[in-house]
Every structure is written in structure tokens, then in C-alpha cells.
Image (cartoon, rainbow, N blue to C red; front, side, top):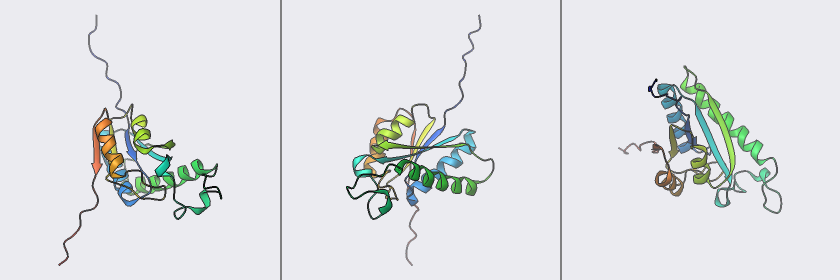
Length: 164
């Protein structure tokens, strides 16, 4: 009888993204970490979860007069997230990391936790205020840290240089 434990392949690194600069830093971190670990990345954007809906100022074409998201919101968000992540993937270079983009309607912390069920690691920024609202807002990253079943990395903003 063979008692050697079977190892299963490592899951992807899940990263929250909303188009903000802090989210881009989180995606870069996730891509570089995925290169080191030899795993893929699942870039996740949550939208339409109450306070996370795109603002009229950010994307006026995405709402109708009744302030409801237009039916093509998912496709537009997915396209922009995919373009942003691909740009960062090219910036990181070889070896290229496989990236899966998921855009889900819902509260950001809940979506990120659901999407990370099979993941190796979850990466978020400290807060966000990108085109699609606040995905990695302090409250989201705090909720993720407290409820995640896996390691979580909260990528800080760029350090400020002292004025001289």
C-alpha cells in the first residue's frame, strides 16, 4: 500500500483590481509573485455592490437616466480590467504569467473572498478609488484580512519622498 501523500497543484494568486494606482501596484505584486511561484493570477474586479458602483463622474456613459447600471457594464468593466492587467503583464515580462480576469457584481470583500476559495494567496491594495469605485478601500482590505482562509498581502502605496 502506497501512503505517499498526493500533492495538488498550487492555486492561483487572486488580486483585487479597480483601475486605481494602488490596485495597479497590487496587480504588479501579484504578477511578480506568480512568476516566482510558477502559478497563474486571477484578477478580480467587483462592481455594482451598492457603494462600489461606478460614479456618474467616472463613467457617465455607464448609467441611464434612472441611475441604474447599463446592461453592458460587465463587458465594459471586463474589457478595461483586461487591458490594464495585460499592460502590467507585459511590463513584468518573461516568463509570462497566465492571467484570468473575473468581473463580478457584488460587494468587493465578498467577491474577493469567494473568488479566492481555491487560491494560494489573496492580494489587495490598501484602498482604491479607480474608475469603478472603491474596490480595495480600507474597509474592504480589513474585511478580507479578517475573513480570509489563506495568506493575504495588502500592498501599501508608493512611499513618499521627503521634501527637501
